[in-house]
Amino acid sequence: MKKPVLVLLALLSLVSFAQAMAQTPPVAPPLSAAEEQFLATLSGGEAQPPGDLVPAPSFMTGCAGTYTCPTGELCCYMCGNPPEGDDSGCYMCVTPWKGRCPLVV
Image: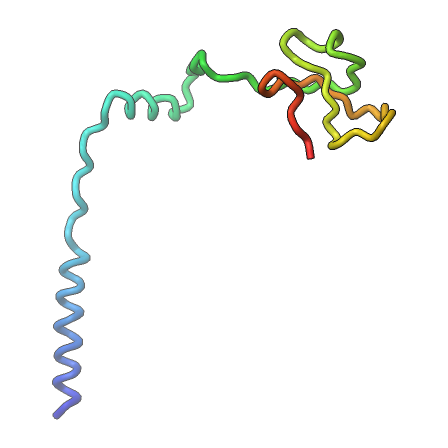
């Protein structure tokens, strides 16, 4: 007597669960102008980058001083804390960070 009741309850719960899962998904709200512009940049078209982006540094190894680097870059030791008198070639032209060479640890 208990087994048919349990089977009936299980079937009823499955039916109600299936009805809940079969509902149509909600409709997405319309996109704002900024969202449409962002999505347009993802479409693979040739888009110009915004003018306020900082360019990636172009690393040049083996600089002898800041005078050998392009304008706006510094000749910095990029292999960690330099030991006294080390001239192993770990100097690179990099974009300054807060007006000085970036900290390398």
